[in-house]
Length: 301
Image (cartoon, rainbow, N blue to C red; front, side, top):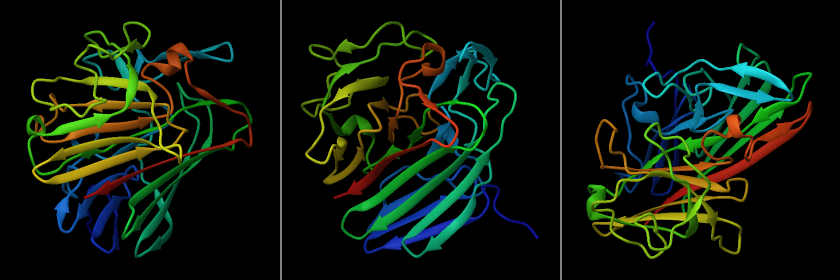
């Protein structure tokens, strides 16, 4: 027997929305609204390019040279991005997750991350994807420390929003007051800075034409439900991503180095900033038995 290289495909449907989540990495491979893509898709026999739709656990973004200290112990992660000498996007995005539940509009996947060199900790992970005909996609990620010692933890996700137009013809709105400058290795070059007066200021919905962005934003302005929103608009369509208060950071990536440059906008809700394992900023310390959950979602109009 043979199967897709991304493993089992979990199809979801609710009203005008349809989605496909893969066994590989519990990743969001497709999301459509009235038959049109809301995120950049990829084929079932294609490894997710540029982290399309992947979950980033137990850290999002980069760790400088893969080195960090936790509880007084030094650790060395595999350098998975050798061109920048960094450990990138965690340890589970290519791993096979198992289906704990699968219904027409919902799937819950689980994965046990066992200790290894560089991350000698044990986590039980769950990712639930649920579609609603009115509210679109909601994703909930939960980590539980089932090991004997306290573990460092962070998570993120890596969907690329699309409205079917090159993003240079689109406007984006993110009501965030600060952004994180980066160096030529895409690592933070200093503390967060005020967006006012810079082309990183996305609060008033500017066009993306000419803006090259691969930066994390913080001090997010939230609605009455505690959600921060990123809105991509163009060609009469809109795609919106929300993130709950477990995610104080949102990375925005204009996809300049993606396989299909500037055709989708990477919008990455994150529980901690880039290089967090090295700096300690925003890293959760999960004691044995502790659990941490965060949620985000995507809507179309």
